[in-house]
Image (tube, rainbow, N blue to C red):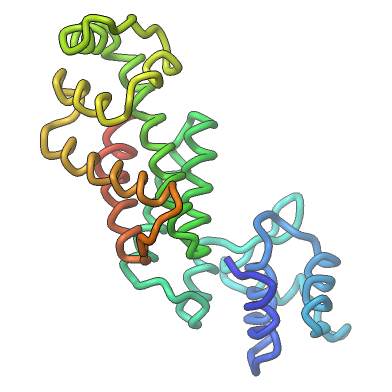
Amino acid sequence: MLDQTGFKEWIHRDLNRLDKLLLTLATFDQPIDLNGIRGRAAEAGWRFPKAWNLSSILGRSNGLAIRVPLGWELTESGKSYLRNLGLTTLSPSAVKVASDLRTHLERIQNPTTRAFAEEAIKCHEAQLYRSAVVMSWIAAVDVLHREVVAHHLAAFNAEAKKVNSKWKDAVNEDGIGLMKEEDFLNRIAGISVIGKNQKDELLKGLKLRNGCGHPNSLQVGPNMVASHLETLLLNVFEKFET
């Protein structure tokens, strides 16, 4: 959530003890012990006074930070608190989308999909917008592939052969992955896995993904990415069992 350069600027501001600790936790992607917290601050040229009881301060944070077996970590409430403090340049709508995605992330059972979705959220929060678009699209396509294999494989293969007589029946996600993604969206719309309007919106998402996945002059901002993520959330992640 916070890189080293930004942390160095923030930690030297006139902030209260809890805020400084939360900012330090925001530089980690995983739980960290007290020595790690002190070490990270020292790397930025600031030392927590020995008189400060870090565990006690964090323990009274009202859920902004929690202690887990591997150490302390920032909660979603803690991240929202820091955003309100001014830590991010994301718009409120973009922050809301990221929060909604994280809520849904807890319900994703497939480890592959979960990993891609979580990385997309992290990219979005870190303002790596092109990466967020690409990773979220990979996660969404993975969901659609598994939905077809689980519930619509025979109909999908029949539809694919109707359009292309040379299509070789797919038996798993890898087989479906041999089809171009635009064709795949058209085929699953043809068998009513998704509706026409959903297909049209997903084709826009595919176009954006292609633009973000290759070197070009395309400019991508937080609101554009938030809209893309919301489209995938509403039309893929929340619609199909993940």
